[in-house]
Image (cartoon, rainbow, N blue to C red; front, side, top):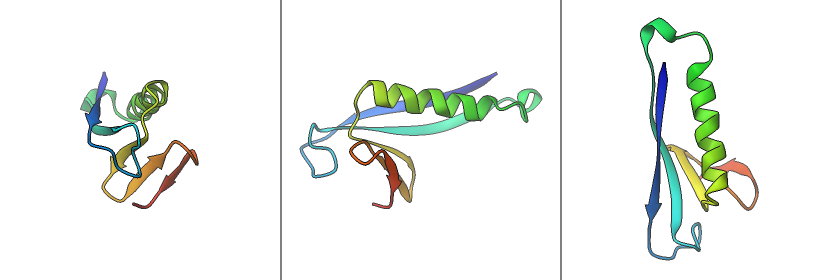
Length: 77
């Protein structure tokens, strides 16, 4: 079993989020008995696909990286 959280954050207009919405993935959890099976990776990929489906301006996943939907690439802020 694995779980993860996608937060949709609404903010005032900013250059990186002109529509005022971006996402943040946090707390990917895989139970110890289910590790080493790719469940954490699969959960993360599903959250990324959901963020794209919601048309979020970018995805804040790690403190140092952001996903820019315009370039479809991870970029440094």
